[in-house]
Image (cartoon, rainbow, N blue to C red; front, side):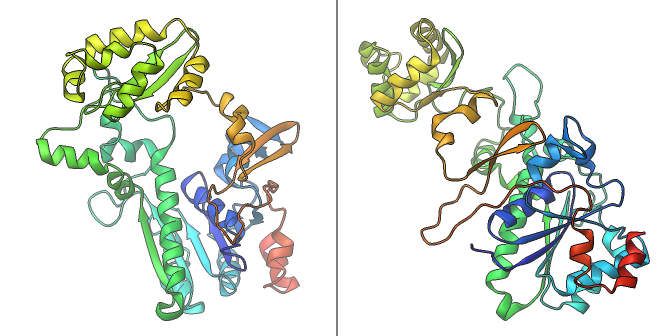
Length: 385
Protein backbone atom coordinates (compact mmCIF):
# COMPACT_ATOMS: atom_id res chain seq x y z
CA UNK A 1 0.00 0.00 0.00
CA UNK A 2 1.33 3.49 -0.84
CA UNK A 3 1.50 4.78 2.75
CA UNK A 4 2.03 1.49 4.57
CA UNK A 5 4.19 1.90 7.66
CA UNK A 6 3.22 5.53 8.31
CA UNK A 7 1.69 6.45 11.67
CA UNK A 8 -0.82 9.30 11.81
CA UNK A 9 -1.91 10.91 15.07
CA UNK A 10 -5.35 12.21 14.21
CA UNK A 11 -6.49 15.03 16.52
CA UNK A 12 -9.52 15.92 14.40
CA UNK A 13 -13.27 15.59 14.61
CA UNK A 14 -16.42 16.32 12.62
CA UNK A 15 -15.74 16.03 8.86
CA UNK A 16 -12.77 17.77 7.24
CA UNK A 17 -10.03 16.16 9.34
CA UNK A 18 -11.60 12.69 9.65
CA UNK A 19 -12.17 12.66 5.88
CA UNK A 20 -8.48 13.40 5.34
CA UNK A 21 -7.30 10.74 7.78
CA UNK A 22 -9.75 8.22 6.28
CA UNK A 23 -8.06 8.74 2.90
CA UNK A 24 -4.62 8.35 4.48
CA UNK A 25 -5.84 5.13 6.11
CA UNK A 26 -7.18 3.81 2.82
CA UNK A 27 -3.72 4.43 1.38
CA UNK A 28 -2.16 2.28 4.09
CA UNK A 29 -1.34 4.55 7.03
CA UNK A 30 -2.08 3.60 10.65
CA UNK A 31 -4.57 6.12 12.05
CA UNK A 32 -4.61 6.79 15.80
CA UNK A 33 -7.71 8.84 16.53
CA UNK A 34 -7.48 10.99 19.64
CA UNK A 35 -10.89 11.53 21.30
CA UNK A 36 -12.06 13.42 24.35
CA UNK A 37 -12.59 11.11 27.33
CA UNK A 38 -16.21 10.19 27.86
CA UNK A 39 -17.36 12.31 24.92
CA UNK A 40 -15.39 11.40 21.82
CA UNK A 41 -15.75 12.93 18.40
CA UNK A 42 -18.77 15.25 18.19
CA UNK A 43 -20.20 13.02 15.49
CA UNK A 44 -20.61 10.14 17.95
CA UNK A 45 -23.65 12.07 19.17
CA UNK A 46 -25.23 13.06 15.86
CA UNK A 47 -28.15 10.73 15.10
CA UNK A 48 -29.05 8.30 13.67
CA UNK A 49 -27.29 5.97 16.08
CA UNK A 50 -26.61 2.46 14.75
CA UNK A 51 -24.65 0.60 17.44
CA UNK A 52 -23.77 1.71 20.97
CA UNK A 53 -21.69 4.89 20.74
CA UNK A 54 -21.40 4.52 16.95
CA UNK A 55 -23.59 6.74 14.77
CA UNK A 56 -24.01 6.63 11.02
CA UNK A 57 -22.09 9.92 10.74
CA UNK A 58 -19.16 8.65 12.81
CA UNK A 59 -19.06 5.28 11.03
CA UNK A 60 -18.92 6.94 7.63
CA UNK A 61 -15.66 8.72 8.43
CA UNK A 62 -13.81 6.72 11.06
CA UNK A 63 -13.67 3.08 10.06
CA UNK A 64 -10.43 1.20 10.62
CA UNK A 65 -8.98 3.80 13.00
CA UNK A 66 -7.69 3.20 16.51
CA UNK A 67 -9.62 5.16 19.14
CA UNK A 68 -7.61 6.60 22.03
CA UNK A 69 -9.25 8.62 24.80
CA UNK A 70 -6.94 11.44 25.83
CA UNK A 71 -7.55 14.84 27.40
CA UNK A 72 -4.99 16.91 25.51
CA UNK A 73 -5.92 20.04 27.46
CA UNK A 74 -4.48 18.55 30.66
CA UNK A 75 -0.72 18.50 31.37
CA UNK A 76 -0.75 14.70 31.62
CA UNK A 77 -2.69 14.30 28.38
CA UNK A 78 -0.47 16.76 26.53
CA UNK A 79 2.63 14.92 27.76
CA UNK A 80 1.18 11.60 26.59
CA UNK A 81 0.40 13.00 23.15
CA UNK A 82 3.95 14.35 22.92
CA UNK A 83 5.29 10.88 23.63
CA UNK A 84 2.99 9.42 21.00
CA UNK A 85 4.15 11.97 18.44
CA UNK A 86 7.76 10.87 18.94
CA UNK A 87 6.88 7.71 17.00
CA UNK A 88 4.54 9.36 14.49
CA UNK A 89 5.10 10.58 10.95
CA UNK A 90 2.05 12.86 10.73
CA UNK A 91 -0.11 14.86 13.12
CA UNK A 92 -3.42 16.10 11.78
CA UNK A 93 -5.58 18.64 13.65
CA UNK A 94 -8.58 20.86 12.94
CA UNK A 95 -9.08 22.69 16.24
CA UNK A 96 -9.76 26.40 16.44
CA UNK A 97 -6.58 28.41 15.72
CA UNK A 98 -4.13 28.55 18.64
CA UNK A 99 -5.89 25.74 20.56
CA UNK A 100 -3.09 23.21 20.12
CA UNK A 101 -0.50 25.88 20.87
CA UNK A 102 -2.32 26.82 24.08
CA UNK A 103 -2.07 23.18 25.18
CA UNK A 104 1.66 23.16 24.45
CA UNK A 105 1.09 21.00 21.38
CA UNK A 106 1.71 23.48 18.57
CA UNK A 107 4.06 22.79 15.68
CA UNK A 108 7.07 24.41 17.33
CA UNK A 109 6.66 22.36 20.48
CA UNK A 110 6.08 19.01 18.76
CA UNK A 111 8.70 19.49 16.05
CA UNK A 112 11.22 19.91 18.86
CA UNK A 113 10.62 16.29 19.91
CA UNK A 114 10.19 15.01 16.34
CA UNK A 115 11.98 17.18 13.76
CA UNK A 116 10.65 15.06 10.89
CA UNK A 117 7.01 15.46 11.92
CA UNK A 118 4.54 16.57 9.25
CA UNK A 119 2.06 18.68 11.19
CA UNK A 120 -1.11 19.54 9.26
CA UNK A 121 -3.64 22.10 10.49
CA UNK A 122 -7.01 22.38 8.76
CA UNK A 123 -8.60 25.75 9.49
CA UNK A 124 -11.37 27.90 8.11
CA UNK A 125 -8.98 30.65 7.05
CA UNK A 126 -5.33 31.57 7.08
CA UNK A 127 -3.98 34.81 8.59
CA UNK A 128 -6.14 37.85 7.95
CA UNK A 129 -9.43 39.47 8.96
CA UNK A 130 -11.27 36.12 9.15
CA UNK A 131 -8.63 34.02 10.92
CA UNK A 132 -10.67 33.71 14.13
CA UNK A 133 -14.07 33.37 12.45
CA UNK A 134 -15.89 30.12 13.39
CA UNK A 135 -15.53 28.06 10.25
CA UNK A 136 -18.51 25.82 9.71
CA UNK A 137 -18.91 24.50 6.18
CA UNK A 138 -21.93 26.71 5.45
CA UNK A 139 -20.09 29.86 6.53
CA UNK A 140 -17.18 29.10 4.21
CA UNK A 141 -19.52 28.24 1.35
CA UNK A 142 -21.27 31.59 1.78
CA UNK A 143 -18.04 33.59 1.78
CA UNK A 144 -16.29 31.65 -0.99
CA UNK A 145 -18.74 32.40 -3.81
CA UNK A 146 -19.76 28.77 -4.26
CA UNK A 147 -23.18 29.21 -2.65
CA UNK A 148 -23.95 32.26 -4.78
CA UNK A 149 -23.86 30.19 -7.98
CA UNK A 150 -25.91 27.27 -6.63
CA UNK A 151 -29.70 27.27 -7.00
CA UNK A 152 -32.34 28.16 -9.54
CA UNK A 153 -31.99 31.35 -11.57
CA UNK A 154 -34.91 33.10 -9.88
CA UNK A 155 -34.43 31.57 -6.44
CA UNK A 156 -32.18 32.20 -3.45
CA UNK A 157 -28.63 30.87 -3.09
CA UNK A 158 -28.60 27.25 -1.98
CA UNK A 159 -26.13 25.23 0.07
CA UNK A 160 -25.02 22.22 -2.03
CA UNK A 161 -26.22 18.88 -0.71
CA UNK A 162 -22.63 17.76 -0.05
CA UNK A 163 -20.50 19.69 2.51
CA UNK A 164 -17.97 20.67 -0.12
CA UNK A 165 -16.02 23.07 2.14
CA UNK A 166 -15.11 20.31 4.57
CA UNK A 167 -14.42 17.72 1.90
CA UNK A 168 -12.36 20.15 -0.19
CA UNK A 169 -10.15 20.97 2.82
CA UNK A 170 -9.71 17.29 3.66
CA UNK A 171 -8.55 16.50 0.14
CA UNK A 172 -6.14 19.45 0.08
CA UNK A 173 -4.74 18.26 3.41
CA UNK A 174 -3.96 14.88 1.87
CA UNK A 175 -2.37 16.57 -1.15
CA UNK A 176 -0.25 18.72 1.17
CA UNK A 177 0.83 15.79 3.31
CA UNK A 178 1.69 13.46 0.44
CA UNK A 179 3.60 16.29 -1.26
CA UNK A 180 5.58 16.91 1.93
CA UNK A 181 6.25 13.18 2.26
CA UNK A 182 7.80 13.15 -1.20
CA UNK A 183 10.48 15.65 -0.11
CA UNK A 184 10.76 14.70 3.57
CA UNK A 185 14.20 13.16 3.13
CA UNK A 186 15.63 16.49 1.97
CA UNK A 187 13.32 18.97 3.69
CA UNK A 188 12.40 17.26 6.96
CA UNK A 189 9.33 18.27 8.93
CA UNK A 190 6.76 20.80 7.82
CA UNK A 191 3.82 22.73 9.20
CA UNK A 192 1.13 22.41 6.54
CA UNK A 193 -1.82 24.78 6.82
CA UNK A 194 -4.96 24.16 4.80
CA UNK A 195 -7.79 26.74 4.72
CA UNK A 196 -11.33 25.67 3.83
CA UNK A 197 -12.00 29.14 2.41
CA UNK A 198 -9.01 29.14 0.06
CA UNK A 199 -9.80 25.62 -1.05
CA UNK A 200 -13.35 26.47 -2.07
CA UNK A 201 -12.34 29.69 -3.83
CA UNK A 202 -9.81 27.65 -5.84
CA UNK A 203 -12.65 25.33 -6.88
CA UNK A 204 -14.36 28.23 -8.69
CA UNK A 205 -11.90 27.62 -11.57
CA UNK A 206 -13.67 28.54 -14.83
CA UNK A 207 -16.45 30.21 -12.88
CA UNK A 208 -13.84 32.71 -11.72
CA UNK A 209 -12.46 32.95 -15.26
CA UNK A 210 -15.88 33.83 -16.64
CA UNK A 211 -16.32 36.42 -13.90
CA UNK A 212 -13.05 38.15 -14.80
CA UNK A 213 -13.85 38.03 -18.52
CA UNK A 214 -17.34 39.49 -18.19
CA UNK A 215 -17.00 41.64 -15.09
CA UNK A 216 -20.25 40.15 -13.81
CA UNK A 217 -20.99 37.59 -11.10
CA UNK A 218 -21.34 34.04 -12.35
CA UNK A 219 -25.09 33.40 -12.58
CA UNK A 220 -27.24 30.84 -10.82
CA UNK A 221 -28.62 28.54 -13.47
CA UNK A 222 -30.05 25.59 -11.59
CA UNK A 223 -29.05 22.54 -13.63
CA UNK A 224 -28.57 24.53 -16.83
CA UNK A 225 -25.18 25.52 -18.23
CA UNK A 226 -24.71 29.18 -19.20
CA UNK A 227 -22.71 28.31 -22.33
CA UNK A 228 -24.10 24.96 -23.54
CA UNK A 229 -27.54 23.74 -24.61
CA UNK A 230 -29.21 21.39 -24.05
CA UNK A 231 -27.45 20.95 -20.71
CA UNK A 232 -30.08 20.54 -18.02
CA UNK A 233 -32.44 18.24 -16.14
CA UNK A 234 -35.50 16.98 -17.97
CA UNK A 235 -38.49 15.29 -16.34
CA UNK A 236 -39.36 11.87 -17.76
CA UNK A 237 -42.31 9.58 -17.09
CA UNK A 238 -40.89 8.46 -13.74
CA UNK A 239 -38.07 10.77 -12.72
CA UNK A 240 -35.39 13.24 -13.70
CA UNK A 241 -32.85 12.77 -16.45
CA UNK A 242 -29.60 14.74 -16.80
CA UNK A 243 -28.83 15.72 -20.39
CA UNK A 244 -25.35 17.10 -21.08
CA UNK A 245 -24.84 17.91 -24.75
CA UNK A 246 -21.42 19.53 -25.09
CA UNK A 247 -20.66 19.34 -28.82
CA UNK A 248 -22.33 19.35 -32.21
CA UNK A 249 -21.64 15.64 -32.59
CA UNK A 250 -23.37 14.97 -29.27
CA UNK A 251 -26.30 17.09 -30.44
CA UNK A 252 -26.67 14.98 -33.58
CA UNK A 253 -26.56 11.78 -31.53
CA UNK A 254 -29.07 13.17 -29.07
CA UNK A 255 -31.54 14.00 -31.84
CA UNK A 256 -31.15 10.50 -33.25
CA UNK A 257 -31.64 8.92 -29.81
CA UNK A 258 -34.94 10.76 -29.23
CA UNK A 259 -36.01 9.93 -32.81
CA UNK A 260 -36.18 13.54 -33.93
CA UNK A 261 -33.27 13.83 -36.42
CA UNK A 262 -34.97 16.80 -38.10
CA UNK A 263 -33.96 18.98 -35.15
CA UNK A 264 -30.36 18.91 -36.38
CA UNK A 265 -31.25 21.09 -39.37
CA UNK A 266 -33.82 23.23 -37.58
CA UNK A 267 -32.43 26.81 -37.95
CA UNK A 268 -33.39 27.54 -34.33
CA UNK A 269 -31.12 24.77 -33.06
CA UNK A 270 -28.44 24.28 -35.73
CA UNK A 271 -25.52 25.49 -33.62
CA UNK A 272 -24.89 25.77 -29.91
CA UNK A 273 -25.28 29.55 -30.19
CA UNK A 274 -28.65 29.06 -31.87
CA UNK A 275 -29.73 26.64 -29.16
CA UNK A 276 -28.69 29.08 -26.43
CA UNK A 277 -30.63 31.89 -28.11
CA UNK A 278 -33.70 29.65 -28.26
CA UNK A 279 -33.15 27.81 -24.99
CA UNK A 280 -36.77 28.10 -23.78
CA UNK A 281 -38.25 26.74 -27.02
CA UNK A 282 -35.67 23.96 -27.11
CA UNK A 283 -36.53 23.05 -23.53
CA UNK A 284 -40.20 22.62 -24.42
CA UNK A 285 -39.34 20.44 -27.42
CA UNK A 286 -37.10 18.19 -25.34
CA UNK A 287 -39.58 17.93 -22.47
CA UNK A 288 -42.31 16.85 -24.88
CA UNK A 289 -40.00 14.27 -26.42
CA UNK A 290 -38.84 12.68 -23.15
CA UNK A 291 -41.94 12.78 -20.97
CA UNK A 292 -43.49 9.55 -22.27
CA UNK A 293 -40.67 7.12 -21.37
CA UNK A 294 -38.86 6.27 -18.14
CA UNK A 295 -35.48 7.70 -17.20
CA UNK A 296 -33.90 4.23 -17.41
CA UNK A 297 -35.32 3.72 -20.92
CA UNK A 298 -33.70 6.94 -22.06
CA UNK A 299 -30.49 6.03 -20.26
CA UNK A 300 -30.34 2.80 -22.25
CA UNK A 301 -30.92 4.68 -25.52
CA UNK A 302 -28.34 7.31 -24.63
CA UNK A 303 -25.76 4.59 -24.00
CA UNK A 304 -26.68 2.98 -27.32
CA UNK A 305 -26.21 6.25 -29.20
CA UNK A 306 -23.26 7.59 -27.19
CA UNK A 307 -25.17 10.52 -25.70
CA UNK A 308 -23.95 12.05 -22.41
CA UNK A 309 -26.85 11.70 -20.01
CA UNK A 310 -28.07 9.71 -17.03
CA UNK A 311 -30.98 9.36 -14.59
CA UNK A 312 -30.74 11.26 -11.30
CA UNK A 313 -30.34 8.59 -8.63
CA UNK A 314 -30.96 9.11 -4.94
CA UNK A 315 -28.66 7.92 -2.16
CA UNK A 316 -30.44 4.57 -1.92
CA UNK A 317 -30.38 3.89 -5.65
CA UNK A 318 -26.72 4.75 -6.13
CA UNK A 319 -25.63 1.98 -3.75
CA UNK A 320 -27.73 -0.47 -5.77
CA UNK A 321 -26.14 0.67 -9.03
CA UNK A 322 -24.57 -2.32 -10.85
CA UNK A 323 -21.45 -0.37 -11.75
CA UNK A 324 -20.79 0.58 -8.14
CA UNK A 325 -21.64 -2.92 -6.90
CA UNK A 326 -18.79 -4.41 -8.93
CA UNK A 327 -16.31 -1.64 -8.19
CA UNK A 328 -13.09 -2.75 -6.51
CA UNK A 329 -13.15 0.17 -4.09
CA UNK A 330 -16.39 -0.66 -2.25
CA UNK A 331 -16.62 -2.58 1.01
CA UNK A 332 -19.79 -3.97 2.61
CA UNK A 333 -19.97 -4.24 6.40
CA UNK A 334 -22.68 -4.77 8.97
CA UNK A 335 -22.48 -2.48 12.00
CA UNK A 336 -24.92 -3.49 14.70
CA UNK A 337 -27.91 -4.37 12.57
CA UNK A 338 -27.18 -1.82 9.85
CA UNK A 339 -25.73 -2.88 6.52
CA UNK A 340 -23.42 -0.22 5.12
CA UNK A 341 -21.38 0.10 1.94
CA UNK A 342 -18.17 2.08 2.29
CA UNK A 343 -16.45 3.65 -0.69
CA UNK A 344 -12.74 3.49 -0.01
CA UNK A 345 -10.21 5.56 -1.97
CA UNK A 346 -11.37 5.21 -5.59
CA UNK A 347 -7.88 5.27 -7.08
CA UNK A 348 -6.42 2.37 -9.01
CA UNK A 349 -2.67 1.69 -9.00
CA UNK A 350 -1.02 -0.84 -11.29
CA UNK A 351 1.23 -2.23 -8.57
CA UNK A 352 -0.28 -1.07 -5.29
CA UNK A 353 -3.44 -1.74 -3.31
CA UNK A 354 -5.74 0.57 -1.37
CA UNK A 355 -8.60 0.25 1.08
CA UNK A 356 -8.73 -0.66 4.74
CA UNK A 357 -10.79 -2.63 7.22
CA UNK A 358 -13.60 -0.21 8.04
CA UNK A 359 -14.38 -1.75 11.43
CA UNK A 360 -15.60 1.20 13.49
CA UNK A 361 -13.93 1.60 16.90
CA UNK A 362 -15.79 2.10 20.13
CA UNK A 363 -14.72 5.14 22.12
CA UNK A 364 -11.34 4.47 23.73
CA UNK A 365 -11.14 0.92 22.40
CA UNK A 366 -7.40 1.18 21.72
CA UNK A 367 -6.33 3.52 24.53
CA UNK A 368 -4.39 0.96 26.56
CA UNK A 369 -2.79 -0.83 23.61
CA UNK A 370 -1.62 2.34 21.85
CA UNK A 371 -0.53 4.41 24.85
CA UNK A 372 0.94 1.33 26.51
CA UNK A 373 3.58 1.35 23.76
CA UNK A 374 4.91 4.76 24.79
CA UNK A 375 3.98 5.20 28.48
CA UNK A 376 4.91 3.34 31.64
CA UNK A 377 2.14 1.63 33.56
CA UNK A 378 2.12 4.47 36.10
CA UNK A 379 1.95 7.11 33.35
CA UNK A 380 -0.82 5.21 31.59
CA UNK A 381 -2.89 5.09 34.76
CA UNK A 382 -2.47 8.85 35.25
CA UNK A 383 -4.06 9.64 31.89
CA UNK A 384 -6.79 7.00 31.94
CA UNK A 385 -8.22 7.52 35.42
